[in-house]
Length: 443
Image 1 (tube, helix red, strand yellow):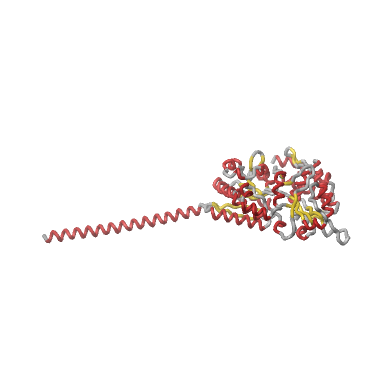
Image 2: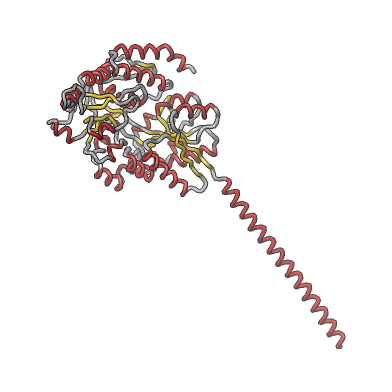
């Protein structure tokens, strides 16, 4: 009996030992599997991180203070989108050659912020994606000012989104108006001409006024064309008829003659070449009026200032300054990621902070009515001038070949400011365009 008990104990002990080995092995397997799953999870995390899409956004936003506002908003997007990271890259002068080189070399940015007037050229190169199908599905479409889309359409397609909008008016120094005995804001071209005369002062009689009525731009580049355009539109003029240049129409001649007449009166001073946007003379009181928009540094200066609408000739008119963004052709995955950023740009959040920080008008209607922006308007009541002008704002054409048209037109404006007759200058510009236009359109 004792032997049987001992044998049974031995078997039980042996079984227990084997069971312990099994449990130990099972525990080991569990640990190994746990480590495997942890490592697998880490690998998945790494893979997810590796799938972050990095987008390049090229922009030429100036002045630097506005660029800082934009980059701050880009950083906000990056903080809330772990799967998409946008790098804002400033493209300095000359911008267009750099952009075209990248497009032709098949290394374009994912998103491009540039002038809408280059739409035709980018379209012909096949560098940009049309956006109307995306827009139709875009839930915030109804929040965007409807009239802005027309400026961005060509050949039945929408080629960009509006980053910002504004228009051109005339800033003035109220104290200088008061000192000259001017009590009424000019409403017509002739009234503007007379006011400019009264504001021109030669204090020492050397025929070189210390104070001029208005600053006019000297140069042939886009700023000159842009700030002349409100006068063209006010005179009922145009630069394109049936997709062809039309520079010698009566409205264009009248607008050029008006600028030249103010200069002949001695009531205007010309800017430094291609620097018509600089505000130094206005801020220093050397000129009493300047043609520009609410993005100007004048808005942040400490001098007294106000603004009024472009005086009318045939009709009231101004020109829009709509900054836009293109979706460049890359890959479907990158394009979808870029569209998420474009949605953000059109949002109330982005537009409110961008507009308050830069002086541009918001393109989002909810942003325009938001409490922060309305409070901003109370602090900057001059903006109402530009908001009211939006209903009479026209735009520059975005047809293919616009860059050549603008160059020829800019040369005509510059030649007129330097003494040529408007008719002769515009006729020469028209002849230059006629000789190359068909070849430009057939490329």
